[in-house]
Image 1 (tube, rainbow, N blue to C red):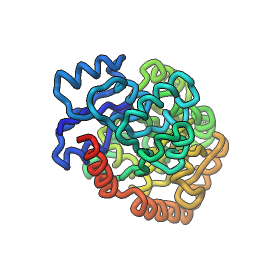
Image 2: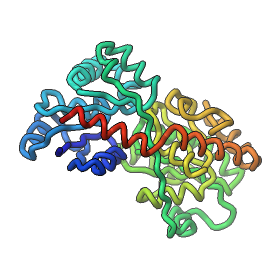
Image 3: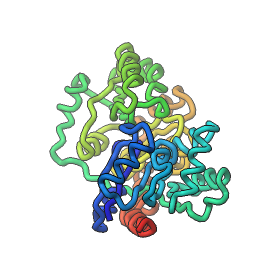
Length: 331
């Protein structure tokens, strides 16, 4: 089967799962298209058999009127944020009505969607993200710091990994972190990820220029990013809204401490002071970061339990079986 994968993000693990089952997959970024007609022309001319969209609104809206069967994978923004907009909600409802199946990362996400669209409940499946990390063995940490213009010496680097767009709120901690850096020059915050929103990316870079100790870093291939994570002090998530953060789960798998904003999507996978640390204000982030730096026993306990959690609840093989099974519904 030849399937089109329409997504609103830069990467999709499910693509590997479908390739492994023998399907021919073509990955398309939803931001490259403005209308459903463009996708209809694409799927018709290239003779696609089915489609799978990421994000009920961003990807799903492009499948309105599609002649081929399709499935939907919820993101975080769709059921957490887009659902608040009447126009987007109507589009999402129409897309979900026609979808053969939908996938939510958590039971909570499924219930949010089912409360809005009760008739779709039976076609919504819950499958958490499967995680598989493979850090590069040749990654040069010191060159990475040099490229980031971080001086040699004691360095405690916190990495905030996200696509640069407003919902990820990468500027949330900048002022408080820069103030902390002025008192302790060893601490640095690196913001790293694709420029999803070019205008906002420019805003982030301009703000960071005036914030000592905070850096916008060059995007890295996944294996090098995993190696950088493994060498940093902690992974940071400051999003306003999340479905299920792959970066958080990858850090947990790599036995890197996680400090995440206390929002439903993060709290669904992190137990405070057990598998990570949750903060509600920038000031609380700084306090928790200091406690993590000064308490190696706490750090060891957190990363050990987080690793166990990921191995138990975020199986790569389990995710593969689910998607390979669901795609049969598109044939």
